[in-house]
Length: 545
Image (cartoon, rainbow, N blue to C red; front, side):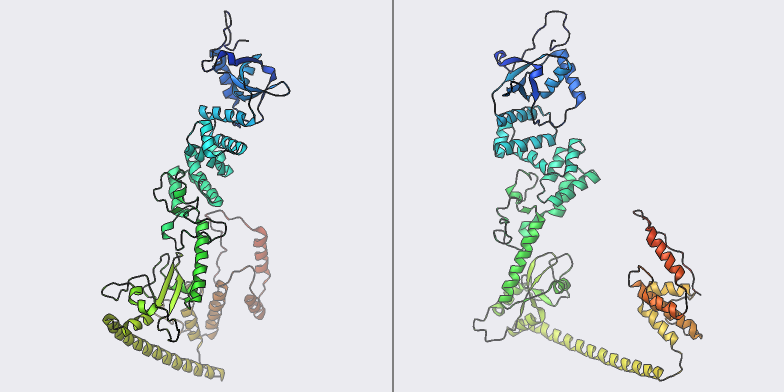
């Protein structure tokens, strides 16, 4: 059969301008077989039929490339689609170039032809390049030379192999672009890569949005690191940040849009180094006689989400300006003489030094403001003398206020104890309304209002803090007090069954628990599903008389 379809005259052989005619052999189609591996993982049947139609109409424009096998058959190195199309046309022979090549060279021909034709999808190409690199043990530069592409292009295509499978499928299907896939694939941490892929697929993000999301959430500025960037032994197995391949400056081909070379793309490694350096600094500080603030202590002293001490903190950061100094000098400059170590250690230090870590992970050397101010006063700083006098006056006033509060507390406590003793000795005085008043004052207002409402009592503590004084029935007040205190206890703990205190209450008052227990078991057995965004139905509230 002709390779150009039906002919009314003498058949003409197709021409191959890119090859010498002497290189081409006509190989029987039944001795050809596809290679054991093909960079094209999927062959579209419709595309094969379209190719067959084109060959039947215009002829075969390029021969296939084959190599002879020991069993006498020929393995197709390049041109499997053309071979399949010719089979559909019923051809008995195929124009072919026979080459003596080993497995590696055959692989190079397969990949080079497909890449140059741009006939592979990005994932097929990335997998093919990876196979070529691993089979030939080639450098990226050598792979690039083999396929006639730039080194950066090969680097990016190889990265696509790191994509999660769902993202690979999306690239294959054309749902996300190769650029977006590459933007995700260059993330060095696997679980962050997976999270970025999920975000991109779920929210239909483009590469710019993913770049912004990753940069905002998973990259860190090394210039702000609290640990030395040149250190090679902070974390076993991790290089220094200067030499790390996950630093943007060492992977410029992966981050062409980023000008700052000192960006870390591995937040987990960054955190390990930060914590390791903190432990090292703590050990050094303790050896030098410094005190280390605990995490809770540091949290109280620093403003949330910042590296700054709270204005109300009793500490001063040695690396910050002294706000009291008219010249705006650093605390470390003002206290330089007091911070010098005493080699004889005979004198007792007037200035203690503390090590602390902010919520942002930065390490700070602190001193107590009061101790620092005393040292500055002793060194005749006028602003310190003036401030010390004011601080001393404030301290004296505060001590007086504390003593006054303590005296009142003791006096009132004594009166309450005396009243309690009278009640214990049988004094028949109505105090239930005072107990209810006290309970409503210390309980959360929403609990008090709910309980008083179901007892049909209107309550406005601003207008009338004790609306219970006119209630003469002690039983009513006792019932209200019981409801307030027991419900307050129940609100503070999770409920999975009837609590012990309610069981005891029902036992003493001879109440039947059976119905409530049956309802609870029924709900537990049912375990009704609650849809996202929909609250479960609550049981109807019943007024308590």
